[in-house]
Length: 172
Image (cartoon, rainbow, N blue to C red; front, side):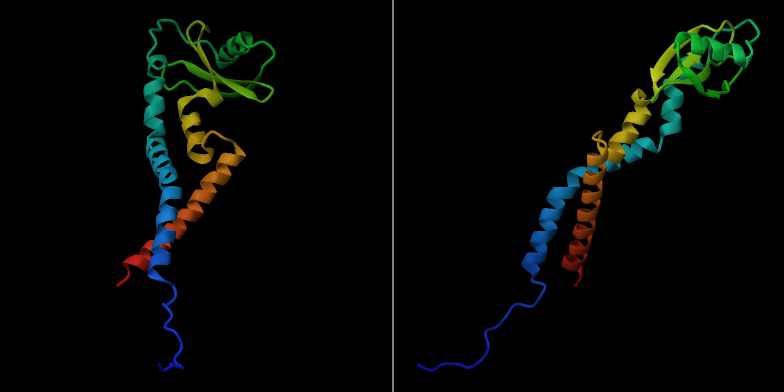
């Protein structure tokens, strides 16, 4: 029996199977987040159009009278929410459109739609409950606050790992 003094053959680094494993696990970890972020981001691109469609019933009001001055519209919104303060006033989009008055009570901001002809409150919705705001929070923090933001960043880092390992595996 002869003994060889040759060094054992080592696999080149990085090992193809190890890189494939990293790529696979990175994909398993980050693909669900990438899909959610891609869908919510794609929907958010059409924010203006979606909000216009949601607000359409308040943009074509049957008004025969001259509109009230903005101060009266703001006063109607503040009367609807006692103890609130004016945050902002959005000009009506047309002569027959409702005014949007944002009022705040502490940290909560509410959007109040006011009929410009008679000062009647048509609708009120918390800013954080509006569809596009919820979608924005889903996209940026998965509706989990700071923890969700960290998860999104972690998924982004693993996506980079997946892309780099994918390039390595694909490279001839």
